[in-house]
Amino acid sequence: MVLYAKADGLGVGSVLVVDVEASIFKQNSIAVNDANIAAFNAIVQAAGYRTDIYASASWLGVYLTVPAGSGWIAAYPNTVTTDRYTNYNGWQFSSKVQLSGISGHFDMTQLYTNYYTAGTDKNAVISNSATTTITKVTKKSTKTVIAVDGIWGSATTLKLQQVYDMKYQDGKISKPSSLVKVLQKHLGVTQDGYMGPKTIKKMQRKLGTPVDGKISPRYSNMVAAMQKKLNAGVKPF
Image (cartoon, rainbow, N blue to C red; front, side, top):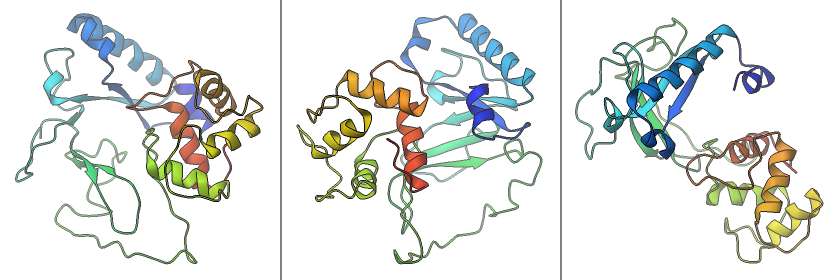
């Protein structure tokens, strides 16, 4: 992670977060998970970065320990009427926020400290009480930006179809897929139109992400890297 942070130009002092969501954490004791997190923190901090822990509220005290005064806690109540988990750095209270004029769904977090803003007042940009209006603009003035969430959804597919100037731009991948065939052509693999392990491995190598031939449905480093290139208007392959 440190190597990727440096390669992406992330400044020293920035926060790198260990995301405790994978099912493998459930196979370990709290002591083992806490020790692994401490090892992660030591490596990251030695490189000059700060650290924090992202975890579901339901995992606290069950699979890991998150000390008060730290932590980014996720919990999605049906109705958000009051601040929760205020003894941590922040509370992610939704993962499905939609913003006018921007495609995709976004996570929304309430910050309780200035930790993530490097000491700058957490309310310096937008106050907690203020409402920000996002005005939809025309295609002439801006390019559509997709969420860099590491999830290959319809918005990412549509963006790929647009960047590669596909005839049909519907945000869907059929089986076989004309879009996949185009990607396979650029990757130099068999053009069968199916997103198989060989194609995925080639994509992962091309983008410099871990290679396992799989695309995680929760978060994929390869998909996130691809989304960044698409937002920059660059063909990822």
